[in-house]
Length: 221
Ligand SMILES: NC(=O)c1ccc[n+]([C@@H]2O[C@H](COP(=O)([O-])OP(=O)(O)OC[C@H]3O[C@@H](n4cnc5c(N)ncnc54)[C@H](O)[C@@H]3O)[C@@H](O)[C@H]2O)c1
Image (cartoon, rainbow, N blue to C red; front, side):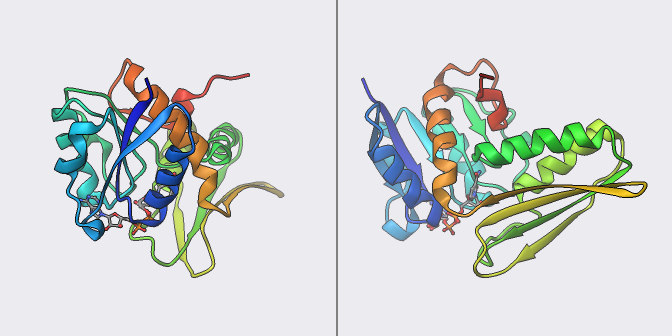
């Protein structure tokens, strides 16, 4: 049986890309597109869904996730700019959250954490398109938190918002007489789709909810 998938934020940039990706996956079936811009409330799409994918806005994502798990629908959240702790009490189904679904960004975070243990100081520059509503980005906030945990040092984040950009991040580490730069660029929203589809397939079998971070779903080759 295909997994039945509804998308919240279906009229948005990410939502439209997710709908197309779900429609082309043979083991998934797109059963609903919720978005105020489509005059379709979430309550209309939940009854036909096994999994809800949410790419909306921070204030909606938390309410949408609570409504979905209450209805027994698992949730995959890509929306950024909210505190995942707000979903710790949500029961009834599983919640998976990733601030970045691109495999390259996950690797960037891993390499940055590794480097933070060895170099004196680090700062992050994140660059996004000018219609992004939150700053710093969820990816930068998570990278900084993981690096601070590893190094015991604060990691400042600088945000750039310009037309022409999609999603980019540079982690710059400095020490005596040297710097190391780790950079990731998403030049197309397709870069997020393999990660989103993986999360849709795995969210039902999570043993911990909410689970945060795509790295938790990846198996090393
Ligand atoms: N995790 C990732 O890998 C990743 C990648 C890119 C973007 N994002 C995040 O995804 C989110 C969406 O980004 P976007 O560029 O598609 O934004 P967007 O503005 O293009 O789309 C958001 C859509 O959500 C809709 N919406 C608002 N409230 C809603 C609700 N209650 N129910 C259903 N739909 C609702 C809006 O009408 C709009 O169509 C942002 O938070 C962004 O930071 C995450």
